[in-house]
Image 1 (cartoon, rainbow, N blue to C red):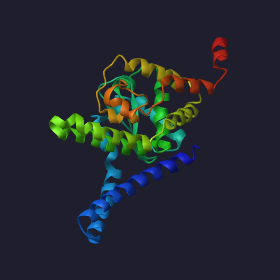
Image 2: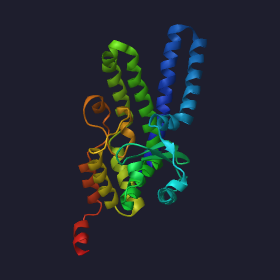
Image 3: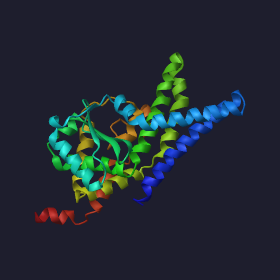
Length: 279
């Protein structure tokens, strides 16, 4: 299953491009002849290539993330580099988000061009094993190319949601139409299984599932204490869901519960309670 995930995600990205070109072809057909159709399709291909090369920067810009120099967080950079070696990928670029609870996300095109963004609260969390495990989870998304599909889904969904603002007094009515469309697109591309599989891969990178299990619990507890402001459409990107499950945010919920994820992680080492008592 792990080896098929990257292929599935690349196929999804191609399907999005084909879908975009198909929509533009229909628009071109409605406007004019075959020449107009071919021009629209060509523009769609160019748009797809431009998006492929820049969507990660769009996401990081949406979150106002800045690149994190090595001198500011050498230990964090060292962790990411070690995880990249274990995963056999190029070291992802590191970014930091100034405000919010402990969170991380991965974005980018694949193993050779990716980025991981963390909030300051996670970057300086005094629990290195948990931080490493959370970073390993994001590295797993990069290896599996989940990050590519998540980035595409989030950017398109965010554009649709933000488009509702042009409605002025009719913003709510327009959101009522565009919100479900954006939600259907996100859920069509993303499955909750990706989180379970990334958790399992991260446990392998760290040689233990317990760092991530403990880290997920800490992230969930902290998310209720610190305010986090961002587009609800970005929910699929984070290690856990940082939004209250109400309003527009419910449309984009793609994470399984932390309790279920922790239970599955603990099950990877069923004798952990005995080991804890022996220690």
